[in-house]
Amino acid sequence: MTRVLPFLLTLTFISLCSVAQETAKPFRKGTYIKVNPTTIINELDVYLEQDLSQKLSLELGVGGIYTDYPDYVFMKRIDIGQRKPGVTAEQFVEGRGLGFRAGLKWYLVRPDAAFRARGTYFQPVLFYKKVFYPYADVTYGGQIFREDGDKNVYGLQLLLGRQMQRNKFVIDPYLGIGLRRKVYHYTDFSGGDGSPIVRSNGELASILPSIHLGIKVGLKL
Image (cartoon, rainbow, N blue to C red):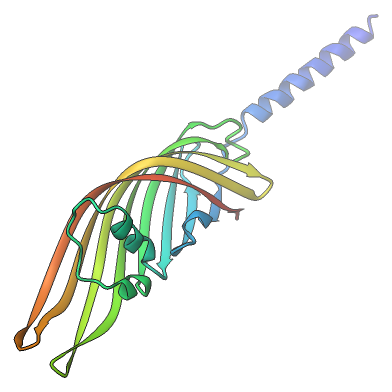
């Protein structure tokens, strides 16, 4: 018995030291690259997230826009009497552009944060998109005139999400609300049939709320 007691005390001491070392392990910052398959219908979004601390991370994103068709569908399907830009359906479909976004993630609940990038977070996001519409040729009185246009979108999103990791694989579902401002610039022509040809340089701006629901998937680098 006298030999067993020192052995048990030694074993207990070693176990406590091991637990203390596990608790004292420093937070290991991670870097993650992700894509958003829920926006694939009109653009390809790529994100890079960098941990700043156990509770905060910075997420930057860039997107390549290869069609603005969803905006055209929104204009046609949800007609509440709003003004519409002088942009044709073909120009919407063939619209090309780029998007940029930056968001700061604040992890409200992040268990095992020193070892895994998982947790519930709140994220305000600022974003900007620029879309260029292709030229469209119209004919009046035997003359060809070229119409063009572009769109700028500025917005704020407030997202709530849950980032989860399995080995190197990361899943990041989210939902939220937002507010965006769209500004269209366009050049079109009217007239003909004996009337003079009139060139119009138009601008149309609107502010609309938005709802966001999606998922990002990626890898820890």
